[in-house]
Length: 176
Image (tube, rainbow, N blue to C red; front, side, top):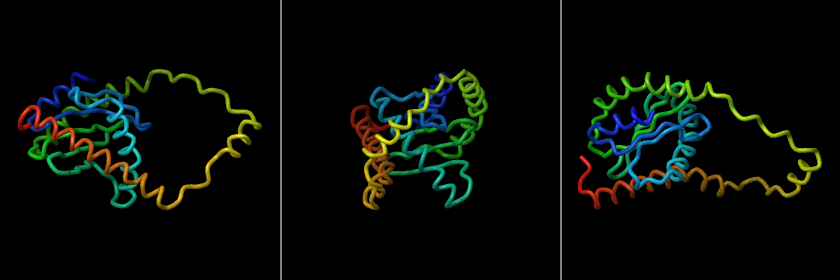
């Protein structure tokens, strides 16, 4: 899958790409070393919970195109996963859609092969006494302010990616 993502990164304006599944697990990525895997997993998790909310408000989404400052984040849902592309502002979305359209069948086939692998068995459920102990230690439900902070997580992740783009631009010159 990394080979397909590397081919996507060769397109003008593409900085990096990754595929993450419905659990928010990054299946493959092709980002410069500047991007750490923890931050990519965090971005996948934020998008994982943000996209269904957008679908409720706007209907089904075939392409999510987010722009902020010098960067552009394009997310394409595919069977069993999502394809994320981090681009410069100058990336040509029409050309990108054509190229992504040709790559998606390959990625879907690779994702299907990954999901066909057996999953490890789940641990046994906790005993009743452990459940009661956990309930006693559980924090009260979140306040509205805490929920608002959680929703801002997407904004923070995207701003961090934009700052990476700016740093890469400063270090390497314009990414065009």
